[in-house]
Image 1: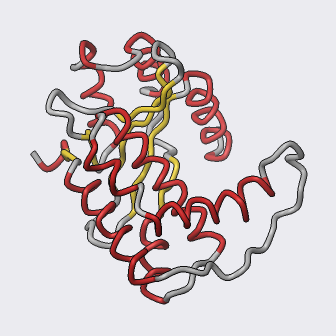
Image 2: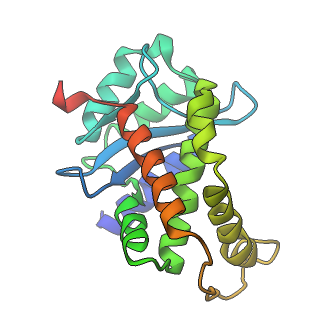
Length: 209
């Protein structure tokens, strides 16, 4: 089977169970980290990350380490039945096909004081992931970081300029170009940097233990 066919099969399994691998790419990391992100069907289809008993987000450089963790920690998993069923189905794949979260692109836009369409989209994906974790842990400190005005402005800009125009009722709409994002880059850089730092601090890397 070709790599494209394997990817399609892998992604179909993820879509069926609503469970995914997410690969975080960040300049300070020697190599990318992979996380597990799920839709919890036992909790009003709430989006969650897999965390350990200390509420640290479980991460690994090798996705097989995450598979071992899931199998060894069934009792603490959200939506454990579907999560383990997904794990059993994807275990046969020699490699994972994660969804890429390119935080490097966000940092580059902050450094250059100019967002591209791609970096705006990466930003709203990261903000969404961060919000999921804040809600999952009911963590007021994390939630306060996403509520900063500069972050909310970027979120609103991304949805208004990209998401609603491209993925609204008519999914066949052509890709849109975006206008220059007007913002206080110092405030936005500080706010997003705090979010990135807080997220990294919440990670426990299985391969590093």
